[in-house]
Length: 143
Ligand SMILES: [Zn+2]
Image (tube, rainbow, N blue to C red; front, top):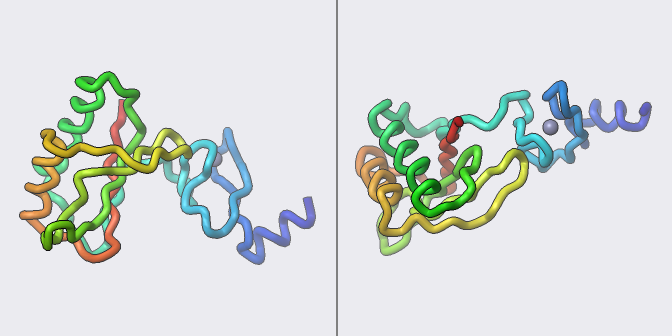
């Protein structure tokens, strides 16, 4: 394991801090591909861009509730979290109404919430504060 220790020190690899996991991850990986913990050892949770928010609790709750209901209503497995990105579709600067789904460290790249309560909650959020280019917003869905 000496080579791996050198790789950790050189930051080519980082080690997942989940004590049940401890998988080695390449530098460009933001989350453990197995358990979904981030580099700081946190399980998937809300992640708001540093230049955005803090988002009022009421808006966050509306979005989280709409997401949870969407997966139930559509008979889809509920992910641990969903990540939305900035979009300037139709000249509007807003949160995308599609998202990346996180199941532990596994991701599904595209889920469309167009026309749903989720999209409405995202519009409300964008109207409260416009996201910036390249922003990403992760909303956790605790069980
Ligand atoms: Zn892990």
